Length: 229
Image 1 (cartoon, rainbow, N blue to C red):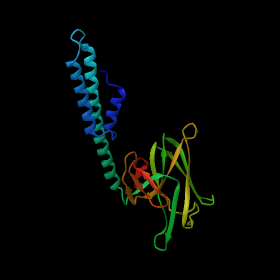
Image 2: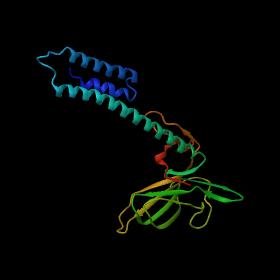
Image 3: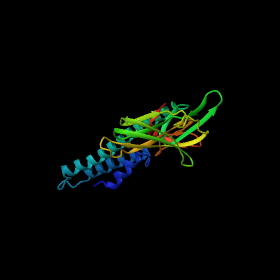
Image 4: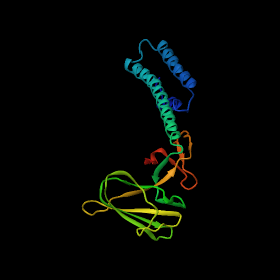
């Protein structure tokens, strides 16, 4: 009696939601019953080879071991998902930097112009980084040489003023960067924009927890949060 590998795979799938644990247990018990029956009715002159019996027992143990491993892994996965949900919930009402190039400018009579923070992510250090802010129409309203910037994430602020000191109109602007290394070669950059975490959508099987950043920025995963401000 040889246990077909497809049957083992069927039992294995039970540990991850395919076959209920009760059914897989019944299947293993059937295996043992068949094996014992075969031993009881074997030809005394041609008994089952010890290696063959050991192999079949090993297959049964493999089924049990795989199912227990899957159960353990599922438990760990559930704990990790719960931890991510708690971590995400702790970010509600927090300001964060996520991939994007938007800068929002608002103004009032008392505080003057205010621009949301923005940031940059570099895979490696840059010897020189230039930042440029443009209007939606493409007009350059502000530029600045930031000098050398380390690898990783850096955040910056802007007062909502042009280089000549004039307040820019309220509205949405875009930020872009030009980064070079010590040899003058371009360094890859990722622009980051400000957003406020407004809610959390719990993850489901096969999907991550998602953070709601409002109508403008939509939803992001925890991995997309580059910095908490």
